[in-house]
Length: 90
Image (cartoon, rainbow, N blue to C red; front, side):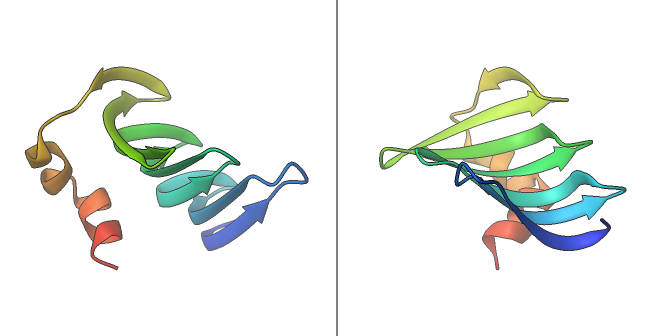
């Protein structure tokens, strides 16, 4: 897959976003039964600023190649990320 698309799994999880060579790549939204991830992806792994909504609570964190490096409490990080900023403005 290349470009924008939607994948859903039998367990109810859904990814809606950008793909490059069959990998989540670029911005996207990933839904599980308990969480929503609004994030950028690189090679199907969370990468950059991530917004996670869980039980009505919004959590922010920073990831590199699928590894969570830190929680973020600074709006500036989210505003400076072109990928997240473009997604939020939709």
